[in-house]
Image (tube, rainbow, N blue to C red):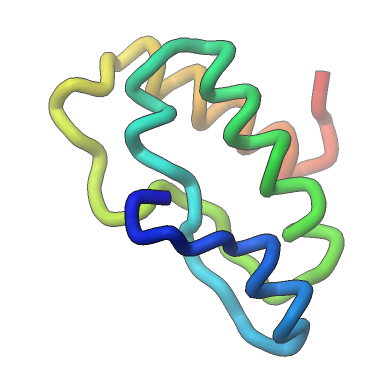
Length: 85
């Protein structure tokens, strides 16, 4: 959220607005706890509301480890498919 964009707040204010992204790439590069917090704080509400395609904003930075990226994608896939742990 470097630009100060809060996708949950935007979606509440403009419920018919389609939104892509919104997953903070800096959080994905921190650790599993930060990844969980980032996803849980946004994705469930946004998916229930509709008009949302979740993914990392911009591109995956080189400082994001392969292990953290796999963890992020696995957890996100579980949320999207409704198979969350």
